[in-house]
Length: 349
Image (cartoon, rainbow, N blue to C red; front, top):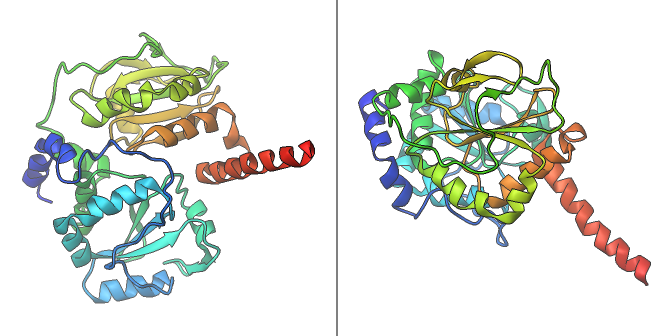
């Protein structure tokens, strides 16, 4: 995408967010009852990504996109219904990439672009796909050019595709690429939506010298941010989420502001600079830190009620100490909760 087109796209964000298939940020993220159907234009792969990449390059394409999904993932369905259904995006993908689907729970073997073989499940864990859908872009040399973890609205998906296809990834980061297009769009003075559970300034979050007694979640947001509005008016209004937030210290920062902050690792900086160092490009982004100031997990894609509640419980329960992969922890927790009632019924007999 040329810089001018990227600017025009960003100017249309409110319309894009509310048009077409409805609100791109507001939906029920409860696991689906019906299994997702992939688009017919996905590549019918034998799961040898070396061969898939070679065929794509021979056809003049920029590389391949590996789609990591789940059969009943509401976020995956949202991607199918939005970005993967928009004719201009589909045409662009098919012209520049091949898309290969990976089931993150499948034991079936896949050969990676570097020649290694492992199960699809282990592949998903190795690439730290904590959220589905995840898209991993491989360039013509088999190197990872970009990763997107979670569901993003069409305008951001379109920017990601062009970032890789036009070789921008070779000379700048994705956040820097988006920032160039966004450089003329500054909504100075736009207030953030505050919540009573946010700590007031000054923001001294240093946990390296002063370990805390509770985990920390930092909300990086922006003014004039529709996705931020949805976060505050939907999941953050649910009592189950508010209850799950109770064990946390919570701080809200404007990622475009020069607000003074001391990071959990003890560095004095500004909200804007810290967001840049963290590589943030999506608002809102929620980053979770432990009592010593180490990052545990981040949500830097669209999030609704079920996913947010699960991540809060994952961190608060210290589930990450036993299971570093969030999705594996969710699956284990569901199995345990389904077994416990059955065992209780047997004891009652």
